[in-house]
Structure formats: C-alpha cells, structure tokens
Length: 393
Image (cartoon, rainbow, N blue to C red; front, side, top):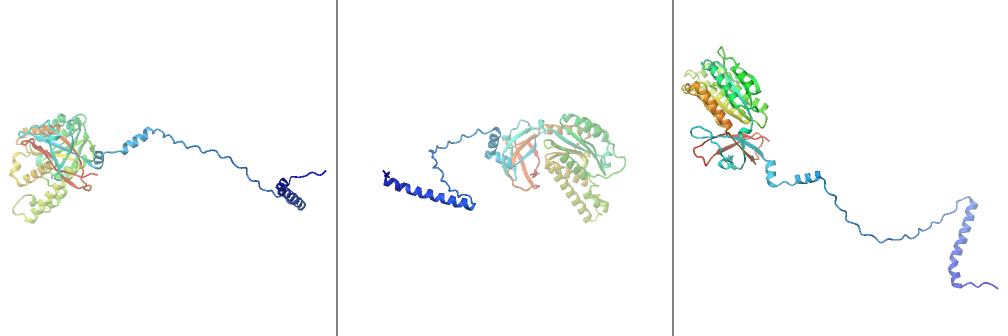
C-alpha cells in the first residue's frame, strides 16, 4: 500500500528539495574540478532589541580651589578696573602756618588736588614717618664759598642734621663739587655719611663751580639707586653760582667778561650766557622732577646775595627748582641760623602729607602733567608741593 502525502505540505517542501539537489550537484562538480566548494552566506540571526534606557544627567564635579580662585579673579568690579588701568601718583605736601610751623592733623577731605585743572579723588593720605628717606647732600667746596670762615661750621651743622633726622631705615649720600663732582659716600647710614661729610677738604686754590652738573648727577643717582618706596630729597649747600657746567663753560671761557656783568661786554655775549644759565637751570629742574625728588637749597652767602646780579640770578634759579618740587630755597641771615634752617627742613620732612590718587590721564609716557594742591579750609596755611610730574607707564 503506497503512502499518501498531503499536497499542501509537499508543495511547501518542493523548493527545499530542489535547492538541496542543486547544492549536491555543484559540490560534486567543484570537487571534480579541484575547486573549493562555494560557501553560501548565512544571514545573521535577528538581534533582539532592548528598550533604550533614558540617559542619566551627569553630576558636576566640585571645582577645585585653583578654579575657584581663577573664577574670583575674573570678576573685577569697576573700581578695580580703574585702579589697574590708572597710574598711582604720590604727592608729598608740606603745610605750614604763617609762622612757619608744620600744620598737622589734616585729613584727605581738607585737601583739594587738581591734575591739569581737573579735581582728583584723594584715596589715601600716607604717614611720612612710615616712609623711609633717601637724602643726597651736596657740599659746594669751590672757592666761591670756601673762602667764608664758616666752612667747617657748615660741615658740622650738616653732620648734626643727618644724625638727628635719619632713622635706621633712612639713608644718605654725600657729594662734593667744585670744578669736578665727587660721590664721597654712596647711600649709607647717618653715622657713615656724617663721618664722610666731615672729612671733605675745602678748596685751597681758586676753582670753578659745576653746580648744574652736580645737581643733575645727584638726581640721576637717586633715581637709579633709591628704592621705589622711599622718599627722595636733595639738600645742596651752595650759592648756586655756576661757572663750570657744560652748558655755560664754553660761553664763559669764550668771553670771561660775560660773567662779570660789565657794561663793556658785548650784548650778544651776555645774552648767550644768560640763555645758557636759563636752559641749564630748566634742565636741572626737569631732572629733579623726573626723579620725584624734593629739592632744598641753603645759600651761605647771606644778605649779600641781593647786592649782586649774578648772585641773585643763581639764587632765583635755586628757588625755581625748589618751588617746582615742593622744597624751599633758604638764605640764612647769619651763619648761626644754619642749624635752625636744617631743623626746619627736618621738621618739614617728618610732617609731610603723602597724598595718593589714581590718575586716569591717557597722556603718553614722559609727558609732564601739572598738579595743584590747596587746603580751602585753612586759608592762612602755606601749602608746598611739586607742581607736576612726568608720566611713567
């Protein structure tokens, strides 16, 4: 009895049977010809898909201390921006009464400070006692002053001044000048500087006086060797009558009569000499101002300086430099007053007000800016400060 197949199932199996016979035939042919059987690629099984899980939001890591500091520094308020982009200006100011005594106890609100005519905000008033001094003393040893009988007295007075006014943190340098300029003692303690000053010999022969060159050299020395936070002061004991500095030497020696003031001297020679002195004094003034130095002069000539045109010209020049820097040009009436004058200088230096403000000027480096300081509430007080400063960026 033959087996009966279900027709629908046979139809479904027919393709598979045909495929199987075809593969068998191909395999036989390939084997007979030495070829490798052909591999039929198999489809990969279907991959099971897993539901996608929602991605967790990453938790931020705590910032370290350095990052916090950087972030804090990146936030700068307007006031800090002004301070960073502005120039800090310090103005030493001396305020004295009508009797010449220092006026103390003033606050920032008691001052009015203007730069190029514009009022400035005084941010701080420094204490002069807390700021060290660097002083350069210039001693004139030329024949124009050493012929006086008080040369030794000048030395002793100046030495006493150094010992009395200088503190352990202060320093002094000593220069002598006649035709040549000598740095007798670099910046050192009061004792060292005073000892060197007392050892300076007076001139024994007639010499010229290189006053302009001496002050210029001392100003450059302080600007180079004094630290930035120290106050800088020049005190010169001289009549200021220059006959040997570079700017006037050629004119004087070309026509010696030009320095005598005689009527027989050609007008052009006197004019050249006067112009040489004027330019030389302006150059000295600029150098002292560039170094942020307060200038004091003490003329040992006494009242006689008013009797001579040349002496008056020299004294007027020293006064010009002193007033432009906030200092004073003294002419003691008698030799005994020298100690009094030096004590007055010491009192001024110790009682100075150090006014500080931030300049917003966009002036280029090296430009001179005018400043003016007043005390409106103290009408009778005398205020002395430098008349301006050179921009340093």
